[in-house]
Image 1: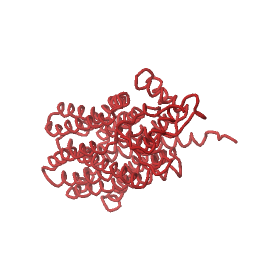
Image 2: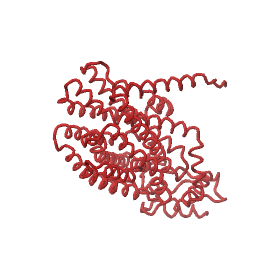
Image 3: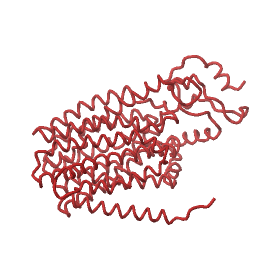
Image 4: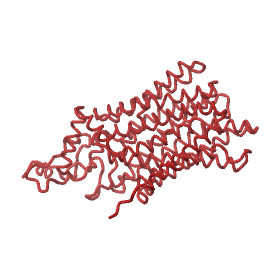
Length: 485
């Protein structure tokens, strides 16, 4: 009897410690195995993902237990980040910095993301300590983010604090997404958006509360930083309790074949660092991934511009029309619609991908960007109900664009990226979105707002440019000859 059959015979039906299971514990076929494959030890498969049958799906009890932990994790993680990041541009304006200076300060985070996110992803993949890297980067970034409050009036010190917090925070969200998607069975990956939406709910709750506080009270920003510190401690506790361990995703493997054996050998090479160049060539040499990265870059530029200047734009419009006393209430309401749009798109993203395909979902998301810019600029000259409804709709569309694109791109990237380079691929996408995209969006957005005189005029200009760009892309796509069967 082959060695792997003896091992399976001895361990079937016996309890197994999940902490001892890794890729090295999975036996590989020898020359005597039929068709080059065998069934993975069921007792080891149950150690991390209990199953009532031989499929990759989870049993009803286990799927609720595992997914509820992930929901809580995303919820408290985004409670922490949503309490301070969305109001950072308002804090800079409160500190007295100009639109041009705010654009430069806000471009620090995407630049640092572009430079450091792949480094953290590579460290996580090569060491196999994704969970440890995730918690370390989040804790250190939260500490430096709290230090920002003590830099008011000192541009150089504020820029240094933003550099430090951005350097460590750059890959946190990508690492968390990569870990969660990797631990899901193949049949559950399309439901990733339904888990991620709980982060959107947490972000909406905290950001709406903070928008109200900073516009209502003179010490609102002090409250915001205090809540951020408390929420960060809670988020770290949930990371310790609920982040899946580093080997959990390996238990979801399907019956092993000789082809998978070849992939496993490549994974060992990638981890040893002798063939990372080949892995990078696979990532950047794929036309599908390049198209994905291009849509992520365009979206990153547009949303980077909007996220940094949309609320400044609202304040300018409300001040112009003498309704400044209502701006705090209305911006808080905008944040509610931001969460609503994101929640709906996160929830239905899997169904949309199944019905229309991932490429169609991503292109449709990008096509909605010009509409956001036009709605933020104002539908009417006066600040009436129609214009305010346009602001609320633009908030919902903006968050929906990101949710649909990011959910689809994360799942697609996990499918196409090489073994043991999934975290690197995810952080590369993060660096393109927040690095190239947000850097150019926030930097050139500040310049455009300064040159145009106000944000609304700049929004109309960029909306027209995006609309022209999409029309050109659509025309080129229609002109391509169709293949005949």
